[in-house]
Amino acid sequence: MNNVIPSIEDENYKTKPDFKNQMPFYSNEFFVYENYEIILGDDDIWGNSEVIIKATTENYSIFNPNTYPQHLYIEIAKIIIDEEIGRLTNEKGEIEEILLHRIRSSESKKSLLKFSKRFGLLGVSERTYFFKRLNEDAFTKGHRNIVVTNFKKDLINQDMVTGIFRMKIAVNYLKKLAEENITEQEQLDLVNIVNDELPFKQDRLQVKDGKCYPATLFSSLIDLAWWQLREALLNGTEYKHCKNDRCGNIFAVTHGNQDYCPPNPNKDRSRCENAYNRRLKYKRRKLASKD
Image 1 (cartoon, rainbow, N blue to C red):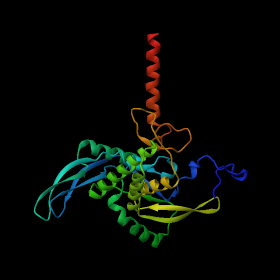
Image 2: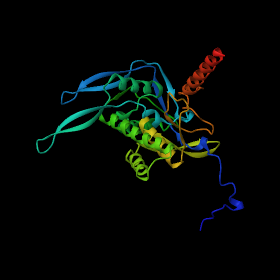
Image 3: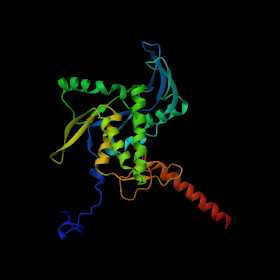
Image 4: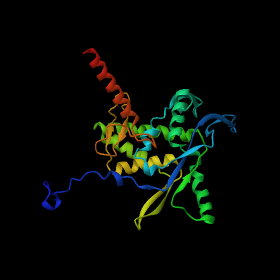
């Protein structure tokens, strides 16, 4: 039978969250090109044009998820998805209307480009081929501890849109988790979504201070994001709504007194915190001028 009151030996059972070691070590770094564009590609066998997002420059920076506390699944969920009504002929020859999800409007394309310029391409269309190329390279050159993953283009196909849409559903459940009004069924739905999105990954090793520790290698950025969500749920990560009322998005808490969305990669200050403080200073100056 469990003790209701902890014994003296268990008096330190309440410990501060170990934010530093909540997330695993990632063996990937990702290319982030300076600029991307969305263009029409070649026609498929049905005559439909492929839509592609691709890098338009050779200038790039490196996104290292090990040095960045923000959880990518929250950022992916901010990509806007368009909804369209499609018509499908069923087996009886009847026309049925179905809800389709697309990235077609200027607003949705802009949001995808915004994400890509910060973190790189999702790599959905490359995920099944990545490890094959990696293993062929390792056969001749040997495995490296860190793999720099370079995606120059990605298809904006149904696989990508579905992955983003499912990420949005999952993050909507996390919002309910942050507000403490999630139902048992919704928690189960969240777990089922994460379970269904099994990432393409390899378990690896890293050496730190003379000892071996686990590391994980992913085939794409979106797989890394799903794994982050899995680990966050296992670790009981706390979520808060951003204090900047013009944002209102949730974020994963990575230090104890965090009130705003984390800063962008390679930035020291949160944009949300800066914007909130600027508005606060403006209001104070306005009130002072009235006095």
